[in-house]
Length: 235
Ligand SMILES: O=C(O)c1cc(=O)[nH]c(=O)n1[C@@H]1O[C@H](COP(=O)(O)O)[C@@H](O)[C@H]1O
Image (cartoon, rainbow, N blue to C red; front, top):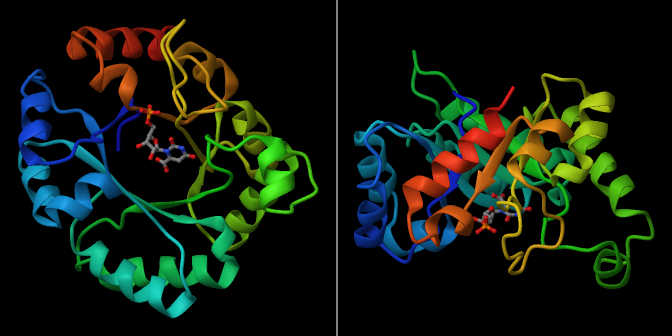
């Protein structure tokens, strides 16, 4: 797995995906999320893989442990590089997800990394306090979810850049911090609440950045991708 920016293929269907991927003549790291997967099904994973791209299959599983375990067993056969669940499903559910993933990974193949969503980057502390009835700071809630994710044996979490550094301190550098909510300087936030720039993410302790609309919605997606890479990788 490389640490290239992960480009969110949030498109309605296959046609738009390949129009977009045609801009690139190198293999990149992409994310297939629920919008695309629910329209096209598992075949889209196969088709994107055939072009040589690394894949984060972002289906954010959150259900009873047995259901998540069985679902993960099936997903493991798709041969993707990274998958995720919601940490709010609890330790038993996350352990089930990991067991399913291990059981479903074909012999001789590397199992996908598995991470858990802490608090979505579209959530504010006020929303969390009022709507989830969690009376902590947002940072403490994210740190708590990171600690139970680690206890369950997963490889890391999805969080915002604002929490990434503290998670690295409490859970270790090896524990992945995958951070969406990335915008180019001055870019529109849209529905995201906890945002940062690619260079902010590098300085803030992210292991990976997930970038969607800043690239897919740009007039020149390749130029936007290159700009993101430049800021993310700058030494
Ligand atoms: O799990 C995710 O990928 C995810 C978690 C999160 O907390 N926030 C978040 O935005 N995402 C995903 O990251 C992508 C962000 O897209 P943009 O806001 O367009 O860059 C979307 O595909 C989201 O589904």
